[in-house]
Length: 79
Image 1: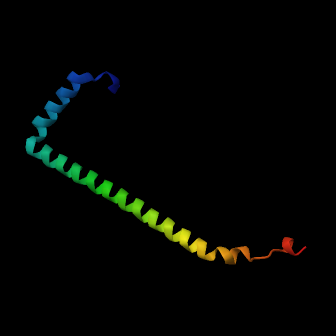
Image 2: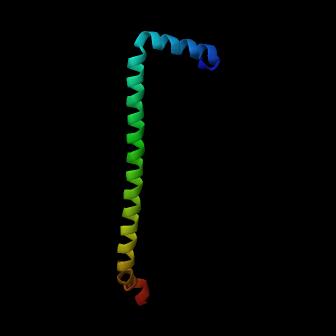
Image 3: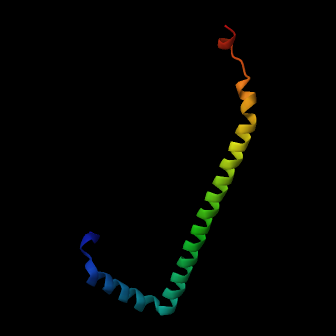
């Protein structure tokens, strides 16, 4: 259905939206969209940093616990 819009159709839609909402409303909306994208990227970066910190903390804990894990004997080892 939307495959046949083309450039003239998109321009017509843009003009209609501009007439209906006005330049000020559209610019403020785009400003809010920009702030939302910036906030989203910031959240992604913070999440990646937390993930890296959690992985490095888990690795440090595992290396400290490693000798205790190797000393565990099972029934198969006793036979």
